[in-house]
Image (cartoon, rainbow, N blue to C red; front, side, top):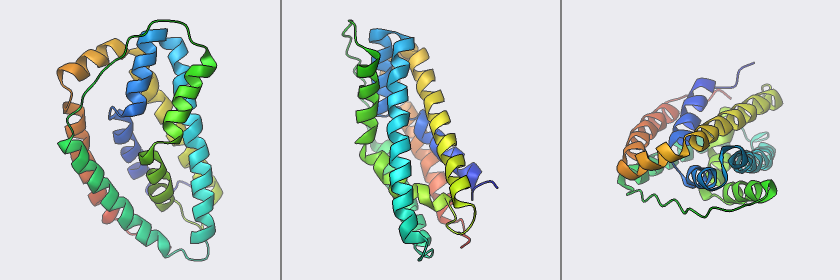
Length: 205
């Protein structure tokens, strides 16, 4: 009943969620400006956009991999190479953290929109859901159940880490300013290891 390589999937998304990308910086900023409870609407917008991306990408790809399941092997190699590219990018990246303090009042719907639009048009998220996400699904074995498990896991873990970033926003902002590249370097090393795991994993069709 558990999806293929579920533990590997959890490890992969955890590394991505820990890394301070644009969505994390956005929720830190909104938390510092408008308070922790309101900033959670930004997190809800983020995961809502991701859920839509997962549904559209997965069932679009499903129409392709159902008659041609061998395509998943190509997706595996593209996923692994993309992770290597992402890891190198993290290892070389010089992070610049700028928290724009703009204290004021904004509605929950506007904060939700911030997270939703930021996530919906994120190139990294689109690549992940179109290329990498389907490799953890078997088109011939409990596809819908596995999809629900993976999507639920992704949404819950993403919101959990976004909430942590929002909850300790001021401390994380100071840490990122003092050690701007540390998390990116560690994430790059972890992604290289996960790329190896993905490329060395046999997909059972």
